[in-house]
Length: 317
Image (tube, rainbow, N blue to C red):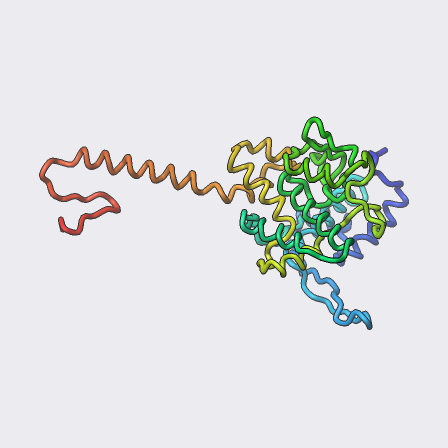
């Protein structure tokens, strides 16, 4: 017996080892589990092929970034959990993710203006103009609703609740992904213009994609970023990060923001709190001013010492 994701026993035993071997790891057997109750696998250096010469299709292997490595490791951890669920393995090693650099950037108003202007640059090619308009709309949706890129790409017109100013997301990468997200006024105006008379189907259809809808704006965004002279660290996903950071700073409602972004674990909200230092600084300054005031009031008249911790009057020394 098993859930909807369960596989036949014969298939489980045959397919899972192949997947694990394809991931380039040592298969963790039941015998290993008995001798090592909780082994911890060292973080592997993952490599991926890149083209050196596209004409000859010559490639070379280069190390993956920490974020790319963690994506592979999370997939492997998911495979391990399925192996336990299907009783293919009795125990699995603990996998530690790589220490990836956190997201410490947001899209500022100036950066947003530069991106918008770069997308709006005139062109004589109707298709290029349409693609730029589409990519800019995707950026606006991510920044104003906190949707993941894949959620925006696969958005269906029938899930846009125009009268309620919100959008229903029926599927996603986590169990919290099924949710409503807010639709800002500018999102609504741009989406109405984009969809026109269409009332169903993909919001961003693509005849060149197997899925039938848009799958990426990365290539066009790189060209826009270069034209605008922006740092290479400015990537489309920052739009979602900007939403999380700004809504956290203004609402202080961790649960509402986490739910709107489809986060299961509140720890996932930590990257969006890096803009919260100013209120903390203000509180400390207020405390220090009150302390200085009390010390001045308690200081004996005519003492002339004028010494307050951190504020020594040089003339009195």
